[in-house]
Length: 288
Image 1 (cartoon, rainbow, N blue to C red):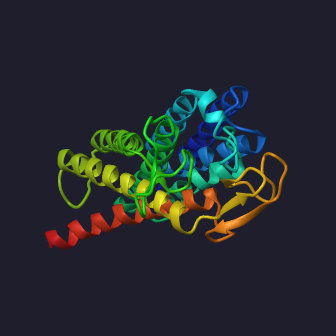
Image 2 (image 1 turned 90 degrees about the vertical axis):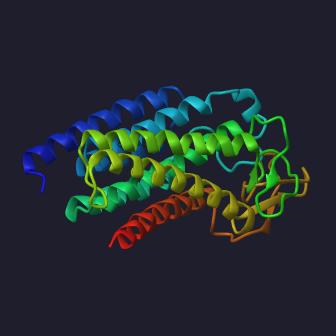
Image 3 (image 1 turned 30 degrees about the horizontal axis):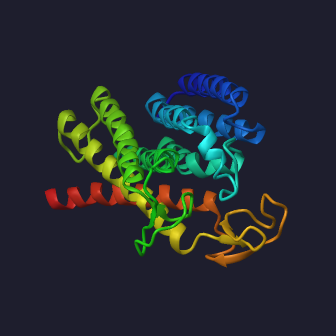
């Protein structure tokens, strides 16, 4: 168990780092005010209860995603009519992307278990993979296809994927997987009862594949049950509700009205974490 002084130091430094990054992101137009609050909450609790290794993955997700969000911003702005929110992340978006990881870090503080580190890493790998796929996939020259049917759809359509997007998704998941493996190695982390080198390799493989799965699961939910609306005035699908950017009302076209993009992001991170944990326990069962 972490001592009180060590916990207080980690909590303070976590708050300071989160405040620094959050304010810088706000000034650069990456977070709105409520998003800064979300970043403070998630960063402080994750570093305070989880530790520096957990904070490193969180920072890696945010910085890398922020960098890619700036790529060809003019083109992405033209797609804003489809998305319910702009490029500035708000409180709900920060909680959707980092909330599950923070919850796992909190559970690990009170009841430490090796599988929780893998679950946390997979959750962060999923949201990183999904964000990279979104930010880079929309730049693809080929039209996206629905993950469920393969039908061509407009760029920005929920559930649409491209080869570039899938490659970006795998790269994002592998990026977090590599960091998680490096932190596993440096911490001499014991996973499934074997030495650090093999543990690190196992973490990389599991986290990378779980992150990719979670990202594809995100697309599948987006194509099936995420709420998608229709603007009759523009004749376009959109995530905007109850009014489109043009000011006209929108009606539900498909999906569950209560499930928006933030909910989809949270569920996909949960899916990635579940897959990773299942792999951990699966290997343990196989070994025994």
